[in-house]
Structures are given as C-alpha cells and as structure tokens.
Image (cartoon, rainbow, N blue to C red):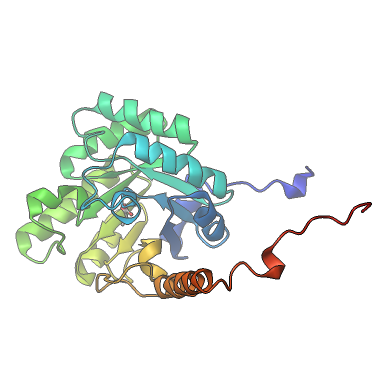
Length: 275
Ligand code: KIV
C-alpha cells in the first residue's frame, strides 16, 4: 500500500476541534455494512446500547450486556475505516467503582479496537470518567435524558424543564467536562439549556433532541432512515426504508407463490458437454 492510500481514522483531537465551529456529524451503527455506509460521511460512529431496542427487540437498554456491545463493536470496527468509533458501556458495567469501569472499558477497547467509550453520566460517574481518562481511555459523557435510568424516571421523557432538573443536568455536564470527557451527548433537553451547557463546558456537545445549539448532532440511524413506525419529535426522517423493504418482501412472496421466481435468468443450467 502506498503512503497516499493509507487512510487514518479521525482521532479525539479531530472531535475536540468541533468546539471551534464545524458541527460534528454523528450517527449510530451496530453492524459492518451500515458502518461502511456511514464511514465517509460521519465524524463519529456510536455503537450505542440502543442496539438492545433497535436490533434485539428489548423494551429498554437495561438488558444490554458487555458481550452484545463487544460483538457489535467488532462488526462496526470492521466496517468503518475513517470515522472515530465510540462504544457504549452498558448498564451495570461501570456504576459500582472506578476499577469495575476500567476493567470493562479496557475490555471494550481491547476486544473491539474502538477508540473511546461512552458513559451515561450522572454526577457520581465523574470519578469513573477521571479514572478512565487518566489511564488512557477517552470517555464521552451522556447527560439529560439517560435511557439507562428509564426505571427510575418511569419512562423516556425530556429533562431539565423545571429548575431542579435543570440544575441537575448542568451539574452532570460540568462534572463530566471537569473529569476530562472529550465530548458530551446531551439528550432530550430544551434548546436554552442545551445552549447554556454548550457555552459552559470546554468539550464539544453532541445533541439528540437537544436543538441546534449543540456543537454536533447524533441520531439513531434506524430512526433517521425510517426503519421504525414511531419516532420521537426530534427525529427528522431522511428515508423510508421500512416501506421499501416491506414492498420488496411482498413482491418476492407473490413471485414465489406464483412461480414467477426464480426465472430463467436466476437459474443454473447444465453446461453443454465439451464446454
Ligand atoms: O445508545 C444510543 O444510541 C445513544 C444515542 C441515542 C446517543 O446513546
């Protein structure tokens, strides 16, 4: 391979640059083909624990395991060559102690080759973030609506709409920033609060349902390409893949039943003797 052909991945330095103005483009991926499609267009690909709901049919992300994150992380790393790849730390893999967080984060990095991990960061998680960063593991924080806390919250709902919650979300973001997070996802908060956090913290913020006041944006790719019936208000649909797949499946089923598939073009014939 010649020198020009070597494509290098984006690094944490490239991601941090977003604070200077160019918005970060981020999406989720869980497998190699999707990662390959996103690679040239995204600064950052997140192997989100949303994989539990989107791919495995779980009711929330609480049931996601380290093994699931490793398997999907490995697939995404095979598919993406340029984007910065972050793998989510699943519920139960970091909350107990800094040692537990390091053991599991280092396992994610070693077994997938990903460049960073993401932690849903209540203020208590600042200790874990600092511990990981000091030991060479870049960490992305995640504040506001934290899907792993769905059972405490009693559902998925926007955060920071009253003063107490607002102060709490700001404290979470500051704690993650002070602990050394290289970027912070802000999920499901009002524009004013997202703007305030973005101006307070030194690292870039990446919004999902958090307005254009963030330094970058992320969506769950399956929502964005129209693979699901219902999406939250903050999702813009750029495709309608579900209905395209359904119509292809319906056409295939009809063709098989009417013996219209396979046809001559899709059928092997015996080779003529002597050929
Ligand atoms: O798991 C996930 O996909 C996420 C994004 C929604 C930011 O955390």
